[in-house]
Image 1 (spheres, rainbow, N blue to C red):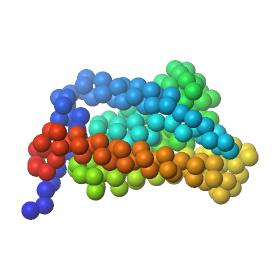
Image 2: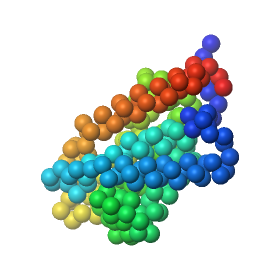
Image 3: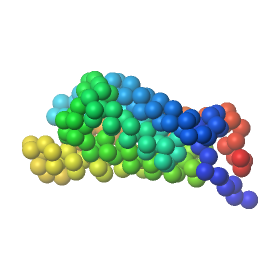
Image 4: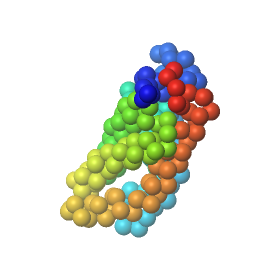
Length: 199
């Protein structure tokens, strides 16, 4: 008999689903994304740094679900847009929020929604299904980030140049983050004892 899953995420197992708790979790994951943004280093030839942000984005979606996950990343972007130093290198302000990395930042919101929607269907409960879910979320980030990079940076004026500057250098690092997230969520579900049964 095929197992079906209700719209429940790992956060709801540990924290009662109330409006106040949801807001607290959304702000918490926005702050986690801000913290992960400070784990960074630059690769020559691209204005986009390697950071821990995407790992936090994937976790936010999987842990909170589609709406709250996307909401956490919208809060993160708004925090940066109003000037809080939450982006990479402790940057903030409107120019940073709408600059060369805006496409990636917007992609965070969409990716968190997608991963959350898949998690609500139980795809974060086994490594075999979690890794493809996180891969899909990661690709969504690039689907927005790379075209915006080409639009916003005059020297990156072709799709080939945009892929070289905004996608290719990050593949190995993103693969590691996807695998880590793909292992972490199923492990967390196993700890709850609810990863293979209806709850």
